[in-house]
Image (cartoon, rainbow, N blue to C red; front, side, top):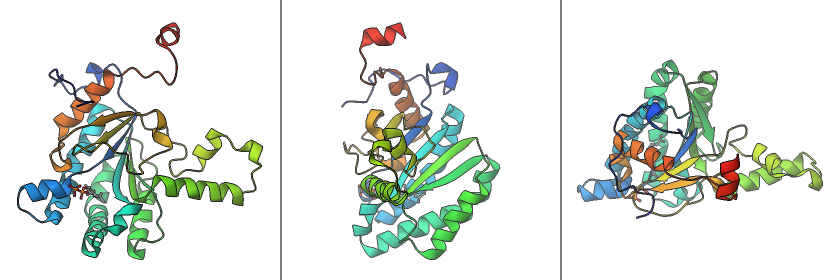
Length: 253
Ligand code: FPP
């Protein structure tokens, strides 16, 4: 399977043992439902275990020296799920904010939200705003929570705002468009990880991910532990990022 290294990963878990640590890692946390089904449990148990798992991955991200972690928690397409599951995912975000905000803040995590707040329950909108405001000055790790997020939706919003701002067509550049996205001001993801053996982008960071490296693993999200994360970073270190250039050009740089 592409993206999975055959050799044993270096288990020293120190950023120094990597040639380069990706600054920005984005994760499609997939497979909660199948994880639960495999164990004869309800899907909700998979989401709960997936939420627990997020804690260790956040800790590991800081330890590994990752600066920005973007997680895909709820897509614009996830509204199509059964109502009780949609409600559960909303409750999970609220619970995570209620239970973890203080500790995240003490640990220097800056919480950002990407996606549309409109459409989410008002109380949740307030909590998300409050979590972002409380942690805005932190700089140890940026945690970008993609919730009610869709890549196409994001581009539609950007275009609407560009038109509303009366920007002339000749002034529309790639940088300008980037500056109108939810991720404005952040570097594009270096590495996008998807768990659970699916090989799709599912409307995630479709603009920002155009030169990202992709890593796919069959492991379901609740089982994607620190070691699996490390393996993804080791694999990333074996990639040659050419950004459209030739090997010769890169050697001369
Ligand atoms: C995909 O698994 C997972 C989701 C749609 C939700 C991801 C949410 C979490 C991991 C909880 C953390 C959430 C927040 C808000 C911080 P799936 O349900 O599609 O699994 P399946 O493909 O096996 O059915």
